[in-house]
Length: 192
Image (cartoon, rainbow, N blue to C red; front, side, top):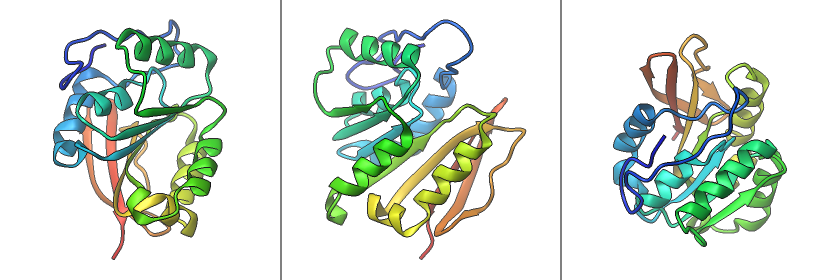
């Protein structure tokens, strides 16, 4: 696993042993950032269920203004911290190691204006935790999500290609799905 492009291009990232963490593949991450490339520079980016932090670190490498990581698995948090340390990334990020809900609560309390809202939010819970997709995406599609996310924000969910996600979560509408092998990326945006 490596950083694909930007400041930290080709630098290796570590991952914990075992199957508890399933990092987004280099190929899928490259596809994701090819799609997002016009929006990354200077954006405010959230990486929920961050695992090793590969997606958020890729965003930092490509010029995101600030990244919020959410990960509660101790082994994954250790790998994420090791990756940030190895790359000498000391600022421009916040790590919440309690839960996704804790990070979303924190953002709900600190974001006061659309200018400080989140531009891109990526979530990749364990594929078999369907309740995590449902609860997180429903929250993001609610009035509370509108407070956290910029009006033109993108929400991207990585999930199993065998388990398509619904077309709508509250005010969030599915805009596209990209399938690559066993994984899919489904994009959501607020309806007009």
